[in-house]
Image (tube, rainbow, N blue to C red; front, side, top):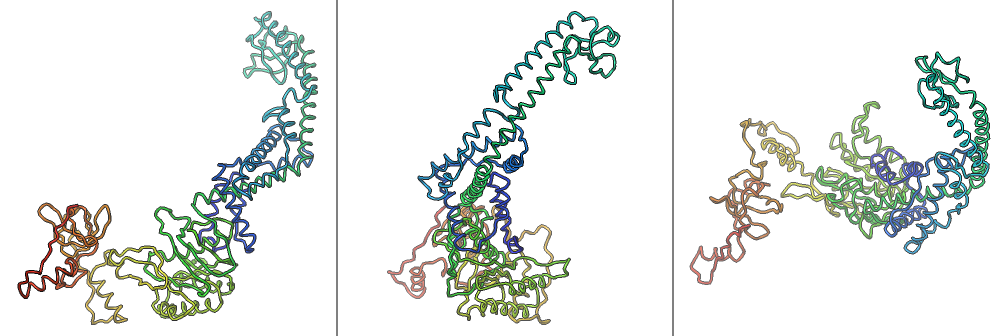
Length: 633
């Protein structure tokens, strides 16, 4: 993972991908996934992801085994260590999971011709599984693990039963000497709770004392012999248990290679099915990598944005173009477009599916370089501009003919004239290097440079000039405006400042002869008409640009509100009566049209306008004016 991957948030993609894995090893492997530079290996990995997804869709969730600790058990067994019952049981459960996975993949051979055949590579270890399961569970070795163990444990059970019977008899006969009549076990011996004052009269050995010291726990002499027999049987039982565990551990060691191969295969499948599951989550598709330089993304989505609200990206850059320069307003989606191209390239070259439409294609890249975001560094004493330029210089030093370079707001953060010059020089250097690049800019001179350079393509992010809202749609072959004045106007910038800014833009500098942009104090409770709530009663004017809620249709006011609050609005050439509470002002008529504007151009038909013109000069029986009433909505 390098700095460019982090800027594009490829690390976040890997974290989401790793969340689909079951085992720790597979998760770690996915977190360190990196783009491949070999086209054959890359496309093979993409096909494997496709195969895993088809199996998920055809056969459902695969029986992936959680293998955390399996490799350690195998290693310990090979080293001659005696495995404990829970470790052996874990080995047996893993073999069961391998058998289930084999059956799952065999079932999937009918719908997938690649991943499903992994099932034929699993070693058959059913006999070892049976040996383990017939001898141990997660906590203990079974009595029937061997005839000797069964005999010893029965002998111990009989001795224990005899000792308990004898102790119960003593408890009843010596009741007055005892603190209680219960039989307990202390330090491996069966004992009775004898009152301290009767200790000398009770035949037996002191094993323990109570906390208060008033009671001593004594092993009666009559059961001491049986206790010794029990202890001897317990030693033999422990030795037999160890023999069984060592035998099973040796069995694991003998099949360690097969177990290890199965574990690696299960981990590989865990990784592959995580990729397939991630593809399903993103509603992504297979896009094969190629050596040609054509970049084609159809209906591509940024994988970290909400798929329901994200506007899809259509971008095409064929072999005749070296790069693309995208223009348009701030917050219009230029940076997201760059990040989408870079991130999808990294994903595809890592063997993943990408969220896009059919027909998309991506060329192989030896590296993806980007300069996006604020590169200011306090620790290195770098301003934003210096940080960007340091990054750009590093990119120019390392890029090759097969690199993808993404530059956002190239040349910004310094004197505009010098920044523009630097931007054009860098773009020219990138063009001559032969790499593929995408850049964004607001500089008019850069736009002109691109338009006059045959192997560079202009593009812009679409912007609704009426609502002053970005549409987040890339339009190739066109250049866009920054729309800064329109945006700040929509945000509520005072009109005097806007007028001053407009004059500065037109004249290229500020003149003291210009009217001063003084701020006017507003009454504390004054509500600006341009930000009025949709339910506020307004004095609508003919020509006001409005939005009809909740449909969010755009229209022009034809007739102000009547006494009932109905406003006649022309929507798509049709006049409709709409309640004033359903209207939201977009742009007032005073800002859209001059004072003497002839609104019949908007609201009247061509036939009506001709008829009115004739009737204004003379009477004509054939001249008819059709009056369209507002249809109530």
